[in-house]
Length: 254
Image (cartoon, rainbow, N blue to C red):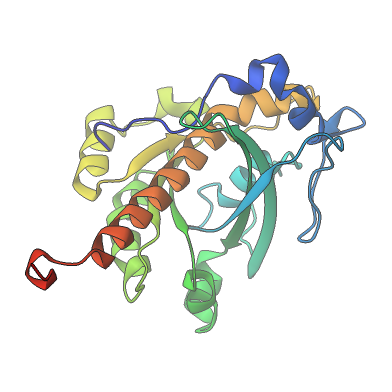
């Protein structure tokens, strides 16, 4: 994506003003795992708006979809690889500060992770995942060239039939093994430009220390950029809707 102007402050989480918000994501020194109906607890003097997004995670089997979601949520990253048998949902809460207003907003990211084989086997799974999705993450692994080659196919298939087009983000997993990959930066750039989609990268190995604050620092670049993409998309769609409701010049009586 070209000429992307950030809408959120990427450095804010490291400031003292973010301490209470970051602390609300920590429990006994580790990342707190939130249920579907749970939310971060803040001091009474801190009021914050929450925006919610449904994010569909798709891609070839064994590219690291589940381990990516687990890492973003602060959960355990499984070392052994196994196909997700159906749909797994995970909630990630993430605070950001908007550049335009200085307002702090909590993003509630509801990830829908589904096994590729389950999509092929059960007809109802794909429509359920696509329904009212705000964003689709198209995953490939830097260690699996086939998964990269199939991204175009997944993008065509998954957005077909969706009336309200979701944000489309390409995610390269196992970025820590990029040195062993034969997928070039030029190819990734071409894919990004041809599909007008941002490309994010993530390292999928478990965070060894297990400390919550370090875990947050580790995933901050990824989640900040994802939230930025979602917020910018919403603002653009809102502006387009407003513009479409304005009277045309020929409709104005003089």
